[in-house]
Length: 210
Image 1: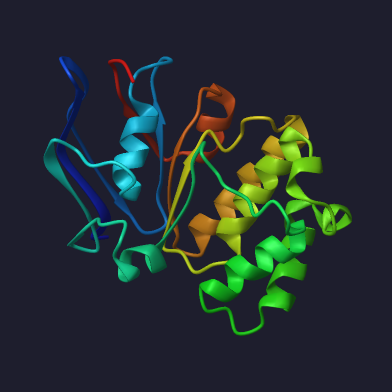
Image 2: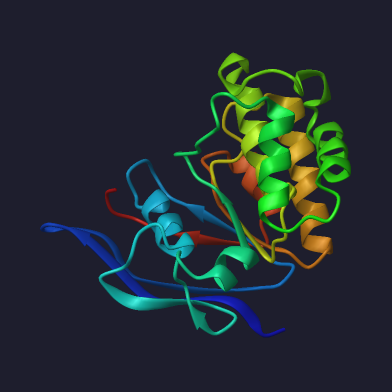
């Protein structure tokens, strides 16, 4: 199957410190890759480069053969991501936040989509709460739900299992398997060996400091 995402010889440095040194891999539709490595290895930096939030100093990153550019409407329509710096609308409830995300990405019936997604992610009882009132695990589910109410061919997550209990990790593992079956490519970073082994088809190991 032809690759959807192609990362070729990506290098990223901060001053004299090289964080990513000629990192390369390819990811096809329906495939999941886990970015692994010790703390400070460059995992988050790699994911930020893949999403276009950061730019490599050398090398290239393409999605469907097009250079990843965060300002490109075509790229934004194909990629959904949840990194550490997730922003919420402080005055909107959980359901209102998701309806806005769904409508902004062209959902024809955003209310129905949000209702289904809230049930799927286990937030239906928190639908009227403000994000600031949620637990850390609930906020993680909200960040994931914001990805699931929009079109996506590629999902990019930075430690999506963080703050989830054992049941939450099993739920997320099942969800990502279902995404793969629909043909969605998944790229994520995690320190949890059990979670990685249960979801990822392969690994992208990085070393260094970020």
